[in-house]
Length: 161
Image (cartoon, rainbow, N blue to C red; front, top):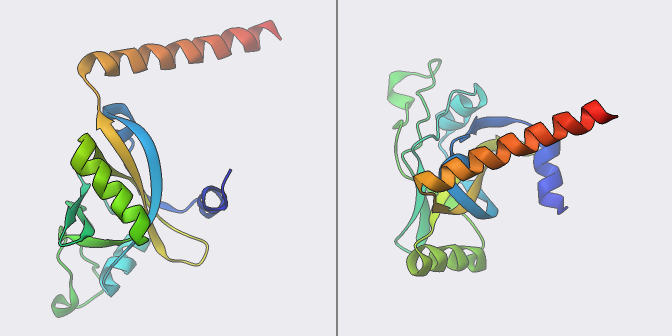
């Protein structure tokens, strides 16, 4: 297990999770990315009220942007200090990672889906992106069958011991 994965497990401070992403997409690869936020967005994220259900990442102007993420206004801030709730937010990645992801999106028809937003041990907001391909209805049914079978198999093995 990589150190980044263990850092995510140690952090355990997920602000928003996209639980439906693994149901709707075959996730082939995951990447951790930084996100450019304004001050009130960070404070609002710390209260844990963000939503990434319909969000996605897309290349624009040579960079990756996270679109359709809902971060509510921070209530304690004044009206003139508020941020836009659904603005495009720039993602921070190494150039090689960004080129790899952009190539997969353009050539292979993959989609970049945010799986979760969390704060790492240093308190910096990070986005876990998944590179995925959409599932058809039959694929979703097959996933449900596999999950149910694994659950039943575990139940049977527990009963044997």
